[in-house]
Amino acid sequence: MKITDDMLTEMEPIVSQWIRERGTCMAGASYAAALELAAYVAARRTTPDRDAIIEECAKVCEMERDALRKNEAVWDANPNLRPDEDYVSEWEASACRGEEYAAAIRALKTAPTSDQGEKS
Image (cartoon, rainbow, N blue to C red; front, side):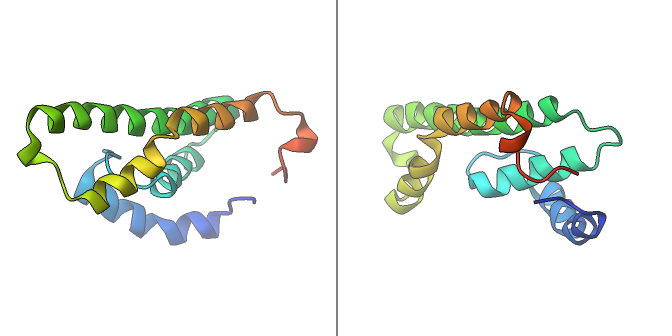
């Protein structure tokens, strides 16, 4: 899908509110939200570098997995801090595949043009 200026303009208030409320911290966010923010920020650059954008999106996936690992260590040491199981299981369902998602995203760097979808 090609990202247009109209799409970016429509997303701007949503992303601005996210940044005001949470900054750029993605801990606990869904991959969709994290990638949406990364894509929005990358698309707003004046001269986007495709490989750099892809790398930033992959890093978001890895950061989410790292955040879950750190929180699990804290919860193991302090069980009373552990959030409810629904929250944890939802987070684990996406974060546990962080390395897999990051590898799939990084594979886009070397994908032949015909495999990259629509060109802008």
